[in-house]
Amino acid sequence: MSSLDPVGTKDLARLCDLAQHEISDILATAAEFKRSPQAAAGALAGRSVCMLFEKPSLRTRMSFEVGCFRMGAQAIYLDHRESPLGRRETVADYGRNLERWCHAIVARVHSHATVTGLAAATRVPVVNALCDLHHPCQALADLQTLLERGFDLNHSRLAWVGDGNNVCHSLIEAASILGFGITVVTPRGFEPDAGIVGQCVARSMRTGARIEVTDDVRAIAGAFAVYTDTWTSMGQDDSAAKKACFEPYQVDRELMAVAGPKALFMHCLPAHRGEEVTDEVIDSPGSLVFDQAENRMHAQNALLCHLLAPKHAAGRATAAAAAR
Image (cartoon, rainbow, N blue to C red):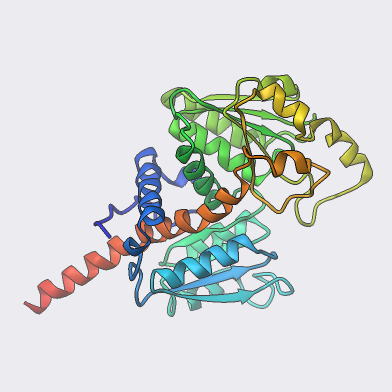
């Protein structure tokens, strides 16, 4: 593996913790790891990564565990589905214990405050693997997938259709940092967080990003890809009334036709087939869902290396110099 530039943040609590060039560097490393798996072999040998999960997972757990194994690191899974962090002991005390044994903490939790609490209390990197407000690891994998398919950061536009949730927030942040266009289409009352959108619109004044939030599905016309997610996230209201609000936003063949004949389809999974997306769309040749799932591992491996490897390399150089 070639030498890596360190990122300017200790943690990844949300995507905007990273600068534009840092995201580009991480994505370049992810592409290298995917193209040449041997490049990642041993990259984190001797490191231990703690994985705290308050929510069930397939892709996040597997991609981090397998990814750590491929890089020679140890991944330790701690199941907190029945015992949320902060109940038995404070989040800060919990983190201060973990930093004595582990080189990084990966947290898939209910509340963003848990991520920021861990990050503030510990000296090791904390990676947000999903919370109520953000999903930066998913966004990195999505960016890698889009770039593989020829997405142009200067001219292409991504369309989001459905609930303005955590993945939506991270993709809006991605657009605002990298300068591409994003159109978010949601039913009224289910828009993305206004504060997050406001921050991203302000940032777009510098980067040239085009950010649009609307309830009109016709706004997706000309989009490079159409992205949707479940209408109801874990633990949220899944009433019939809520589903009725979302039915006009189901991604089916007719809605994809609005985007255009070359538009691709994206979903972070798991999918509720027959609700937010039809089988015809998710199983179509233009569906990228399993590429996105695979790229979770490559993007996360790259992220961990940029967070960890440069610091440890610098530490080894300092120790060697002292020995001389």
